[in-house]
Image 1: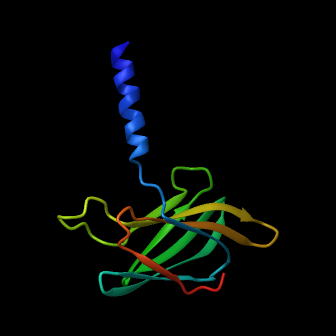
Image 2: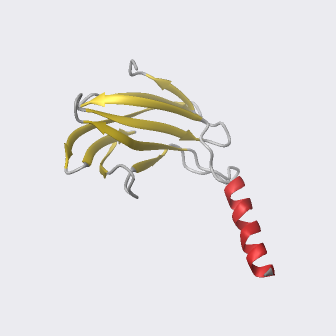
Length: 136
């Protein structure tokens, strides 16, 4: 019985220390509509952008770019591949947590041909400032 209690206690502490987002924003995008976010940190500015290009068989193809590095993701609603994560700063020796962005595919509207995507900033140490350049 005490092992179960210890396991539950460790689980509760893990959940309390889990990375909660500091900032969030929702986007409803048409095909090839680009979200542009300026990421400011430690005296530098870098551009993060993403867009979707194809929706087929309940899968959304998303292209993203950050600091001239590009990526492509296939996302599904309600699946383990529902989101992608982008590290925004590397960890220094003095910092414990690495700030990152999480983009989550929430739903697709077949009638309007739009995809809802939610953006979350996880940054416990407040090292990042965001400017949303997309008019949403």
